Length: 172
Picture (cartoon, one colour):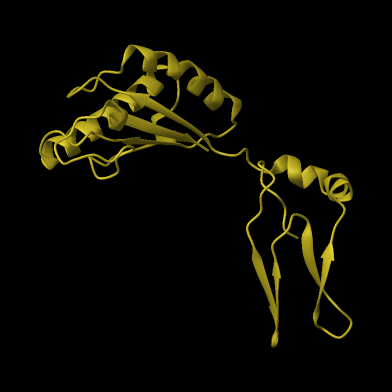
C-alpha cells in the first residue's frame, strides 16, 4: 500500500509479478495477489487504513525539520537574527525521543576555496557546539562543511552573498 506523505503527496511504486507490471502512484493504492497469482490493484479507504493501522502509523518517525542560520561575512559568528532561530530548533530537538541532527556549513563565493572550506566547517562546528551547550549530546550531531560548492544563490565567482553564508540544520 502506498501511503501519502505529510503533504498529501506520494511517490510511485512498481509491482511486478512474472510479466505483469503495474504502477501504484496514488494515495492508498495497493496491490494484492489474486487467485491466479497476478496482482490485483486496489484502492483502500483512507479512514479504514488509519483505523486498522493506527498503532503502526503512530510509530512512524516524524518528518525531518530543517533550519537555516546565517553568518557574518568571513566569520563563524551568527547574525543577530539567526541567534533567535536556535530556540525553535532546540524545541524541535527536545520533542523527538532520539533525534539525529545533521549540521552542514556553507560559505559564499568570496575568497579562495581552501579558506571557504575551512570557514564552512568552522561555522558548522560552531552550531554543533551551541547545540551541545544547550544539552544535546554531541553523539547525535554530524558536522560537514561544503565551502562555496553548494550556494543557495548562484552568483559570479568571487561574489559575496549573505544568503550563502549559512549553516543548514536537519533534525530527524
